[in-house]
Structure formats: structure tokens, C-alpha cells
Length: 267
Image (cartoon, rainbow, N blue to C red; front, side, top):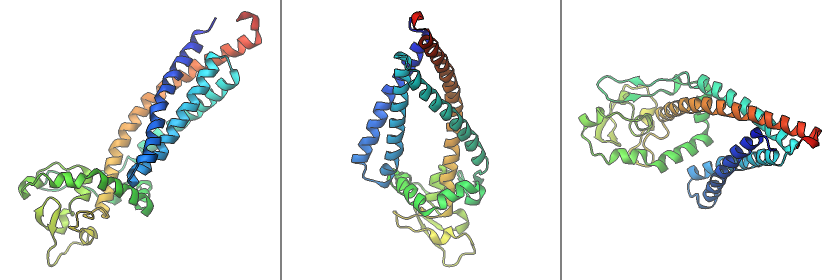
């Protein structure tokens, strides 16, 4: 008689197998239809995730339902490594996102962000030219600044707006620059400026440039990453508990397989 643990492992891996198919299809679609650097950047991780889930689920499904102890052992080994890696990543995510907060600007509804406030590891990632080129491409494709410009707000309305970290860092110059407001993404530089912030010279009214190469833009991206990683870390904890439960059930199925293979008359 098929043991309950084997059936449960088989059922769970069948669900994962079905989940891997649209993920893999999405990655393949991106590889053929992706026209921007942002889309091309996503295709390899998506395909890798789809293939990984497909192979692991097949090993678990066949190992549990067909009583293949060798496949089930490989499945449990991969699951154990995944649990360790996920645990390490969760701790790492909390550590590297521990630093960095937005700075409140007097009389403004938004915060401003400084790159030096974030962990050195994150700073190195965005200061890498190749990485930043891909990130900047995603920001431009996402039209975050264009959507801001479409509001047509007055200066008093604009400074009271609660901008996102990316909008605050990439779509306008820092407040210290004392630029004159023309529109949400058009600012006039003063004849003379006492500001030492290099972003003041980096700013451009060219709508394809704006402050995408500013330190404040990189800091805004890190502020957004920090928020997202905190959420991912919480989800990882829940997923980690789920994996540990599945791993425990898989161990029971493996034990059943070995016992049945040792005493075939019991099957």
C-alpha cells in the first residue's frame, strides 16, 4: 500500500511541476520577445528558476510515486541545500538592508536619499557601471519620471507631494541645489551655486537623462530595494517553514522506500 507520505510528496511536487511550466514559458517568451535591456536582464533568472523547479519536482514526483530511493535521495539533498541557502539569504537580506533611511526635508512632503547612508555592499552593486546601466534602462522603460511630469502641478503642489524614493532621487535635483522650478522634471540652474553636491552638475533637463546618473538616484533605488528585500525576507521565512515541512515529509517517504525495498514482501 502506498504510504501517505509518498502520496503527499508526490502531490506537492506535481503542483510545483505545474507551476514551473508557466515560469519556464515566460522566460522563453522574454528571450524571444524581449526588446529592452530590462527585459533581457530578467530572462536568464526566470528560465533558470523554471528549469530548476521542473527538474526538482520531477525528481521528487518520480522518487515518491515510483519508489525510486535514489531519485528521492537526490531530491532531499537539493531540498536541504535550498533550505540552507534560503536561510542564509534571509539573514543576509536583513543585515545588508539594516542601514539607510530617507532624510526629511523641511517643508517638503517627500524625503531625499544619500548613497552613503546604505551598506557598502549595496553601494558597490549600484556603483558598478554594468549593473547601473541595466538598472537605469529599467527605470527609463518604467517611465517613472514621465508619469510624474504628466501631473502638471504647481510648485506648491509638487513640494507637498509624497514622492517615491526613485521619483525623489531620479526625477528631480536635490533640494540643496536651489534650482528654480519650471515643471516636475524641468529645473533651471542658478547662475551661481554654493552647493557642493555633485548631483547639481549631473542634473540635465534632457528627459532621457534627468538625474538618472545622480548619486541620489542610486540611493533612491537602494531605498526601494531595501523596502522590497524586507518584504521578501518575511516571505522567505514563511516559505522556509513550508520547505522544512515538505523536507520532513520527504524524509518519511524516503524511509518508507528503503524499508519497502529491504522487505519487498511487505509491499
